[in-house]
Amino acid sequence: MPRLVYVLNGPNLNLLGKRQPHIYGSETLADVEDACRALGKELDLEIRFHQSNREYEIIDWIHAAREQATGIVINPGAFTHTSVAILDALNTFNGTVIECHISNVHKRESFRHHSYMSLRADGVIAGFGTQGYLLSLRRVAKLADEKTG
Image 1: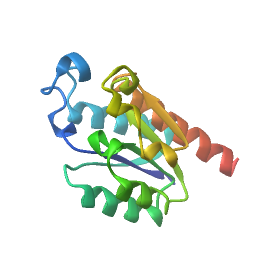
Image 2: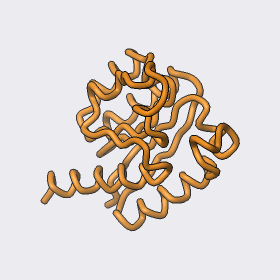
Image 3: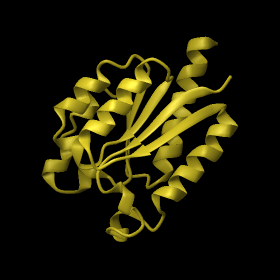
Image 4: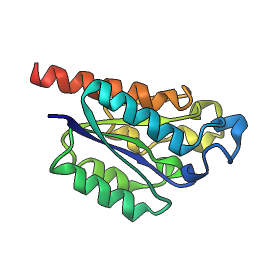
């Protein structure tokens, strides 16, 4: 039976491929979703892929994941630096949480250097472009295998 992983994306990621391609690249969020689903099949992961510009929707998806998911891969976008509410929701989740950023946030503006999500994340991937999503899924699968292995 496939293990369920939520891949959650925060504000402005719906503009991936159009917004600041010199920072975020030319791939669209649909391209990222397709790549995640393809790798998910290989790793025996069922992927629930979501994006929202609304904090409460991300929180609702984390709550839904609590009862059924093995892991959460989250690119919270700007909520990374502002949302205690998303952190609180992640703290209710017992599975693996991987925080994923397309750009290397540590080479950018100083306000981007702080992440509330990192206080809960089991791992953080930043600066690998959209490949970071695939690395995140591989890590969730590896940790799930170790738990059942």
